Amino acid sequence: MKLLTRLACSAAAALALTAAPLAALAAWEPTKPVEFVVPAGTGGGADQMARFIQGVVAKNKLMKQPIIVVNKSGGAGAEGFLDVKGDKGNGHKIVITLSNLFTTPLATGVPFNWRDLTPVQMLALDQFVLWVNEESPHKTAKAYLDAVKAGAPNSFKMGGTGSKQEDQIITVMIEKAAGKKMTYIPYKGGGDVAVQLVGNHVTSTVNNPIEAESHWRAGKLRPLCVMDKAPMPYKTKLTATQSWADIPTCASAGLPVDYVMLRGIFMPPGVTPDQVAFYTDLFKKVRALPEWKDFMDKGAFNTTALSGQEFFDWLGKNEQMHRVLMREAGFLAQ
Image 1 (cartoon, rainbow, N blue to C red):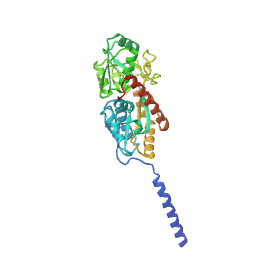
Image 2: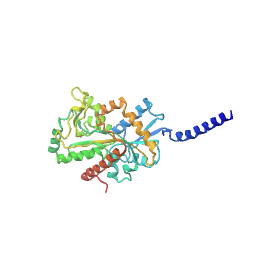
Image 3: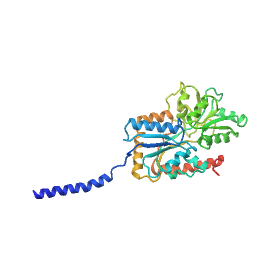
Image 4: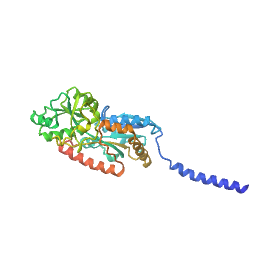
């Protein structure tokens, strides 16, 4: 009996010793609500994607804690980036990034660089489409470019999100192709930009598909071309006659402009590998959902997704690309 008792005690002790390391290795997960920072205004592409993610994570119970979306658009997104940069080690905060990840520090000199954050996941690349009002006389990208060339300087009004950011960089690229200056009018977010074009307050915009899709469906806006190397693959008709796949690339339509934008997830600096792993796994689950495929289809995204070293390398190359584009446009901070 004593022998059995000793054996039982030994087994219990061994179990206790193995349980401690197992507990220590338990996967990290949030223990309170996660703040999801959007460094842009409401209604734009980044805001729509963040709120979509918030909804599908809750609907599919992909994590125990809720996600709270917070817009911090001040200073062309600098407010949001500096907030995340300053919250070192906080595993309960993530930020969705667009190309202002590169353009804002380059244009303003704000003390921030993407390397100050922790890269987690490229979710997709967002397209830019040249849009005009449905009542516009310009039926093709070439006709639009020819009209800019023939018009008086600054007579064409381009609406865009922010100053010295993606939309204005693209506007400068169009100006170079036309050899003619345009009037660039900045607004707070892509939703506002689309509404301004519907109201004919500007001549054109370079909105992301998701920002103008509903107005296109309603017959208010007309897409002329997409600024990617290949046409979009989405063939479902969104109007009586057109799908995203029917929109030609700008280069093939006579407008030599090519530009896509990041939709990615970062965390504050100093977070742990297991915290990064939690969100990498979370977004893997999100991207596997049928709702995500529908969202990609509706917004006509380029579905390229990267993480780890591949994502890090892509970020370095694109930062340098933006530095060159912004230097050519005269947008670099002095």
